[in-house]
Length: 269
Image 1 (cartoon, rainbow, N blue to C red):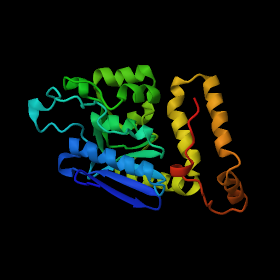
Image 2 (image 1 turned 90 degrees about the vertical axis):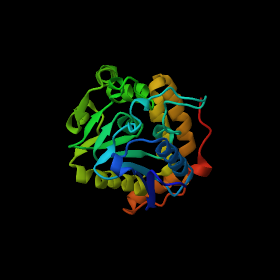
Image 3 (image 1 turned 180 degrees about the horizontal axis):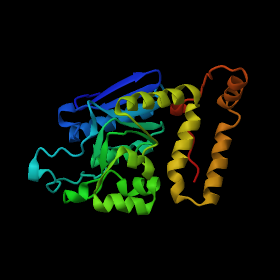
Image 4 (image 1 turned 135 degrees about the horizontal axis):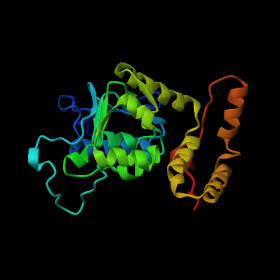
């Protein structure tokens, strides 16, 4: 897998993906988007990956689009394959939890990428903002879908329509950050959460719960009940359902045997 603008490592079930253009404060490039998408696909397919941490090299998470081309930065796209998604697939579509370790500034696309993740640990010192409307373009990377789900439409309007910057502390007040910590503690905290998931949660259970969680906003309570019931039928009676109980009763670490690659169910309508 090409690693020019990212770095990838896998240890103890946790994949760490580092946006790696430190001299440019990890400004987003087309190469970075392609490499990040490839890394996400690898993680989704590999049963050895139980959780993913996305972070940035140096003292920034991602400074947003690379503005080095100046006025040509946002020239009209050519070709029919342009997408404002920036990364394919997005983090929310993966079957493994993705934790954004926002170790520093996350501006524009840098923040909208973090919004695709399931959890966000944010540096207290970080400056954040979805600033695209101040650059003559508009928010991207599914921000009009992710942000209202996370903070509600009124707060999303505040951030998307003004393009204002805000602090890590305000990110917690808004509900964007699950936790706000000093910058040096952000990555260790995210890795601790990821390792806990990797060791103590059943992979198929987490994958199914994640997909239904992101899907639930478009469902009625009755539809959620039907899907929960159908998916319980997938999980109940499996070895992991027995192992989880016995490991707890015996005060030992669980030994999970389910595999997303072979046990992923047909998704209920």
